[in-house]
Image 1 (tube, rainbow, N blue to C red):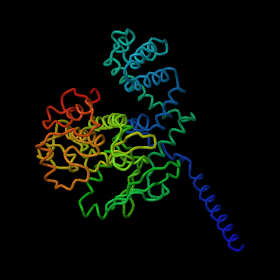
Image 2 (cartoon, rainbow, N blue to C red; image 1 turned 135 degrees about the horizontal axis):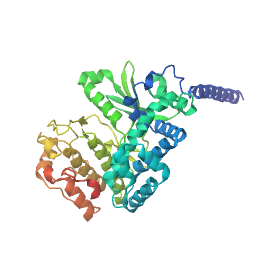
Image 3 (tube, helix red, strand yellow; image 1 turned 120 degrees about the vertical axis):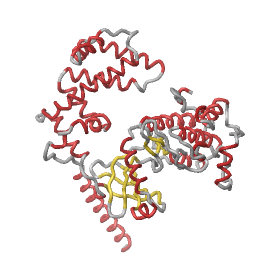
Image 4 (cartoon, rainbow, N blue to C red; image 1 turned 180 degrees about the vertical axis):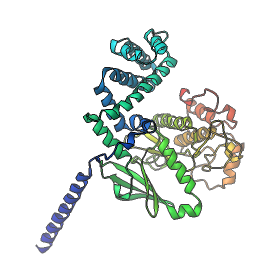
Length: 441
């Protein structure tokens, strides 16, 4: 009887403590009250980040446009249509194009177009189905974006509006200094010599993230400070649903901390080797490769060479969507520049890296080919599963041997795709020729 009383008291006390903690968390979920308007004084530097890239800021800004006047509302509607048109494919894209053209002919849209610039606006008002092509749509998107950007200045003058107050609070919140006290830290689920990855919960939103904590002493000892900084900068620039997103970054006495999206679906290496029968079904391979390709193209569009593309660095979220991660070896190149530094993982490095020749984006497509091969056959093109072989031998095979397709899951189209990615000469490799888009294969 005494044990039951003690157990009941323990449960009650634990529940009380949990309730207190919950009350503290709820009280912290509020936006700070702005103390000055200095944040938006340099609107040019923060417009793109706050009004286009951040989902909440974009939503609030569009609500301001719709609530302000008919001109801004028409611009916002047209901007959304033109922006979403880029991601539509096949027949639906043609229907969307005609729908946009029909909306341009409406009176409110014509009023908006005439407010742009004289000759340009007059050209847009004479558009027809034959002349309304992709080039015109790109020009119109840019013109619409400029007009919306000008409304950002008007946003600062409308302080009496409720939407501006909410938006300004959000701006202050996103520019607040982040520290370890910003999050509740939970359990660690990945620990290595240089890093610890744990789950954290943001106090203001309740959102769960993954926090990658890099040990400062070990980074300094191994000279890895520059690589950590490069990874942070690339994560800040990336804005794709197929590249992992950086939510916050801060440091404490012992660690550099990168707070990113929580990817609780595991990595592709786990799905290839540890989840049921080794290998992945062809339908899933096609699905994953399409997302990986879009992620790689997004990085290349920012002149970033990934250099560490492999299934272990492709993470899946709860919905099964792929995202590229771990940019410690990535490098940003100036346009037209090449490098010859040897970097990557044995078995995935392209011949030009192994020879230490000048290279740029081509090495990522070789790694994509190796990753596709591994997804299908559960082994690398030039190294068998759990084969104990020296790195020098893998290098020799990569440079001299031809890729063999002995696994029964290889069909004609996938063989052709991998063969195109694994061309030893860069000029013949898929994705490396002028105007060559792997998504068209």
